[in-house]
Amino acid sequence: MSRARKHSATADRDSRAKVGRRSALGLLGLGGLLTAGGVAAGVAGRDLILPASAESAARAVDLGVGGGAKNLTPPTYAPTGRRPQYRRATWSEQFQEGHAWSAGGEGTASSDSDAEVFTRGDRSYRVTTRGDGVQSFVRRTGMEPVSLKGKMLRLVFQVEDVAHLERMEFYLGSRKLADNFSWVFHYHAAEGTNYVQSGEWVTVHLQWADVTGAAGDYELSSRGEPSDRSGFTDMSFAVYDDGKGAVTYRLQAVEVVPDTTDVFPKGVVSITFDDSHGSVHDFARPVMDRFQMPGTLYNIADAIDTEPFMSIGQMRSLQDSSGWEMAGHAYSLKAHEASYPKLTAEEVDDDFRKLREWLVGRGFTSEHFAYPHGAFGKTRDGVPVDLLAARHFTTARSIISETTESFAPAMPYRLKALTGINDGKKIGGETLADVIEKGGALDRCAQSGDWLILCLHRIVQGVPTQNTELSTEGLERLMREIDKRGIEVLTVQEAMAHYT
Image 1 (cartoon, rainbow, N blue to C red):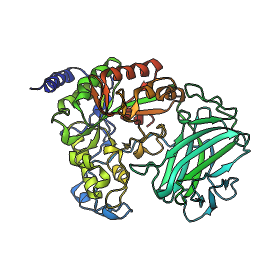
Image 2: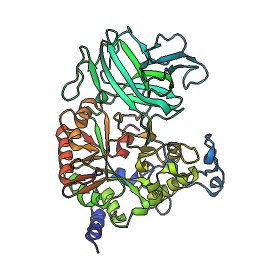
Image 3: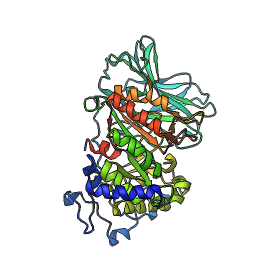
Image 4: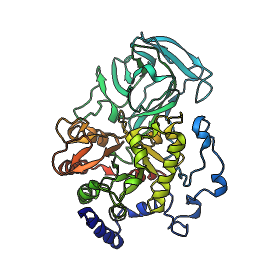
């Protein structure tokens, strides 16, 4: 028997004798742990997630997006969908008739009120860039002063076709933006998955942790803290094309909404691990146990009980004795390696269904998921992967980190996470120093009360050689720095359940 399997056997005995401080949530999950008789332990019957009946399974489902989505059957386990309450705006511009904003910038070719394409009211504000890479914007100055103390910004917009999109920014300031803070909230990548996709209405939350620049009399401290949080009279939503073609975008809302600094004044960190690597149990768990910090493990069902991955016993020990969350990453290794956008909608939906059945059938009732390779674009036959994820899970995590995640998440099926964190030498990714040192991600989280999701993979003893590896010493430093700042550490399941 390998050392990992011996450790697993011991852990199994320990898990029967001891229950960790967070295990009640781990055992019951959000939908209740189904027993052999189909009854949930300690959960009212109305909260059960029951398998679809044979009759309902025979009925095809049309998601209204065409392609393979018409051939889908109801999921065996549908998510409860419990998510934090939608945050109502304290200040809102929805670009209906009579708004006082105007389009401008040398990069603007045209603008108009659009009564054909909108998601609120009866119109949106449509702008087309000039196609030469120069800034286009929708702006208003001289408003009544707005405060962002204990607040964040919410943007709702659409880009008709992202083929020539380069980046998007937002400016908040005064004196006709002579004094301003700026957020670069989207860089469009030619390859890989983008948060902003063609023809979709997108919601973005901008928090103080994400400020990228300051000008005029406004300043950012060495720890990234803004010099002012109130008295703002000017706002500007800016778009750049790539200089090779025009971009048409629609702005639907710019709003101020409450953040969670009153509940989590130091913010929240979720420490997540992808791929079920055995090193997480053997090397990460002992470090995190010392700090009483649980993690979320996104699992590949096919990998479990094979080397070098975890065993079922190790998963149960993590959940029951250390309060970890056992979430989903893929059912088959083949689907994981391919990534969902290379499969058909029916194949992706089938992998989701089998994964939920596998998790629930073994007592792992997390309703949370992480996309293989972070990819949530469209399937081979044109169905959005995040739409399929919503049939089976309550959230789905990406590896996009252009802004930090928030409560409630702007888009729960595109949770943002910082990945590639490592303490190796010249191996790419995100250096541990960028996270833990002055002005880094932890400082900004602690100052802004937001939700920082970290994505790790393998934990190694010694110096990492890949940007998906973090050393045990590096993980210890990370835990120590989180603890020193007094930041709450929650699993994804706990974070989402907190405001339910």
